[in-house]
Image (cartoon, rainbow, N blue to C red; front, side, top):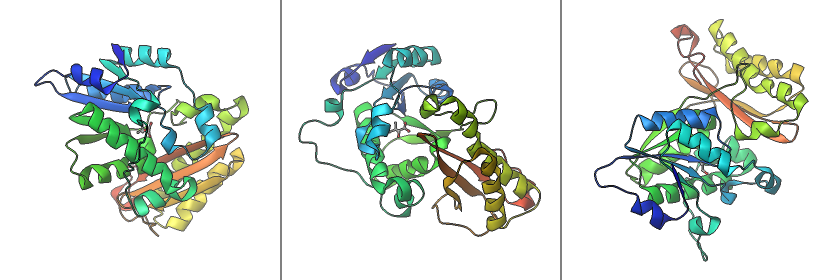
Length: 289
Ligand code: PAF
């Protein structure tokens, strides 16, 4: 596997007739990223992993400063998972001097949940860099993780609205054996906070259990989910049951519904989610992440 830093090098690697899959990342790869790279390997002739910690999507400067970075480790992991190229551009390659363009998805998709708490600017930073990465790499398919469920919706909207010639695939959330969703930020959890971080996945499981027991009422489901967080002394920043397509709040789980949660655990902000199926469908979708 080669590491390259410029669009010119990237384009020189293109071979006519070969398909390309892109796995965009901000590095510090974990099994969630690696499962996307392995899936990409089955879908295209060439697998490109991008590694760029995008300053434009960080609303908190200390989060950007402390974001874990280890390019050598990432290169090894990406190669083992089947990547052909690690595209690790410099900030100037992505944002050349005088850069003045932003790509925005407007409305509730970017203004609710994460957008309400981090600011919609977070998603404007994501959509701008993702548009750039798609234009730089020109993939046939790009793969993202379901853990960032709202980001996945925003990116699908972007690709549809701008007729970008790429297929978007979303990979399932990968979890630690105890349920914690993998995140590059987990490495920053202090020992006690690692245990407390279970509050998020336990809230999701409590909600799934409540629905499986026959309750569709959103208030009761959210009460059960919130109660599951209390023993961990973790207060959700938001805990919301929303339509999985447009993120509008729902009052009952009478169709597939996204339960999304965000919380600060010590100095780390974590997110997680699950898709709940209505009680009448016998919990068929419960446990999907
Ligand atoms: O999900 C991420 O890691 C980032 O938001 C992405 C898609 C690589 C854009 O910087």
